[in-house]
Image (cartoon, rainbow, N blue to C red; front, side, top):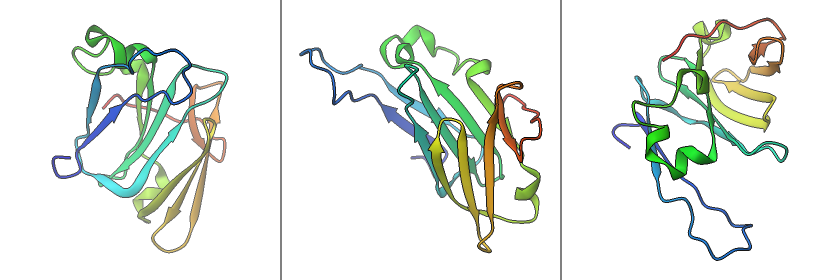
Length: 144
């Protein structure tokens, strides 16, 4: 939406046995630069009640956004935007001279990004730094 700068998400629970309606809110995540085509991925781990959203924008920033069920149920949890600890931004050094083509989420701890020239970058979550890391190096985030 809006020239690829807005990603809209709505919760849909297809496994719920109860007859309750889905969470009513639609989240509109605004990015400062347009999101690259084929560079959005999601992870819904079985052991946590969260949704991880990963995206790469035209400015070659890698976004890692953690959304909890309350974000889709209560407007007060997202007033003023997604909290800083839930949204992290990284400028991978490899994106400086190569352009991301496609993002694939292996699981909540691993991403693969294919590049325009056929190269591949693998990102692993570094639990010690609570972020994604390229070749297990620590990663510095800035809040976008």
